[in-house]
Amino acid sequence: MRYLYSSLLSLLVLLAGQAFAGPVDINSADAGTLATAIVGIGEKKAASIIQYREANGPFASVDDLARVKGIGDSTIEKNRQNLMVGTPAN
Image (tube, rainbow, N blue to C red; front, side, top):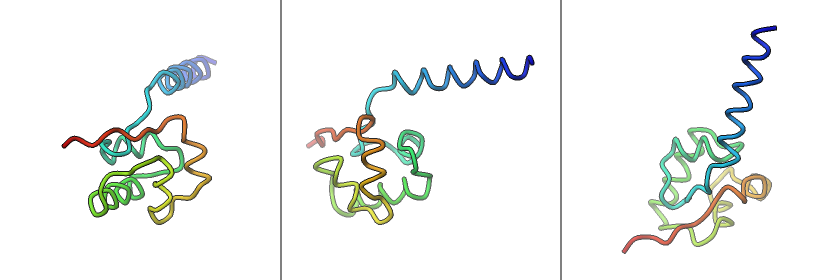
């Protein structure tokens, strides 16, 4: 029973952190941040996002993530409220 309460408390703390975390800037976030923040994206796909960004320049919109191989509209829609596109520094 103690394990159950401990597990539930840990889950609530984790979810509370997710609920209050601000949107992640897909133009500046590192691979670890992208993998953690985007549901359905692991370390390899996060690295692909960064490779695409480095090769093609910053994303103009969150929808541009669909240009990265293996990321579809469904993944973007599930994560849209947690993603943003910041203005690139000049």
